[in-house]
Length: 115
Image (cartoon, helix red, strand yellow):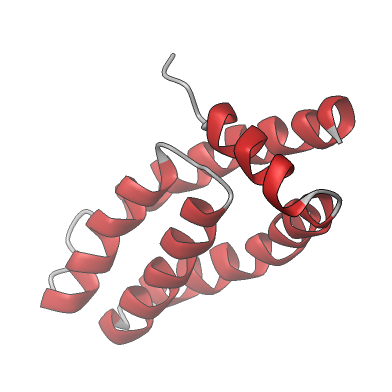
């Protein structure tokens, strides 16, 4: 299994922003389920514009917390939304959802052990 979270980056952020990192990571875990739900709805409705928007949002927030795998998956889905070709979007969403679950667990573990 590949590394889901860039711990070196998180530790560097912890040195730079200190206690604010905990709030940022908690906010990520609080807000992201809504984004994922909106992304799922956009896929179900075949709304390419909204798929692109939600995938872009998730890509950026995941990258900001040091996610390794999730931003790349979101980038792929974002491009599908940009082109309007959503064939395969549901399968990709399944991968995104699984990646987020692993990421969320890793973020929570980091909060509980490092912050």
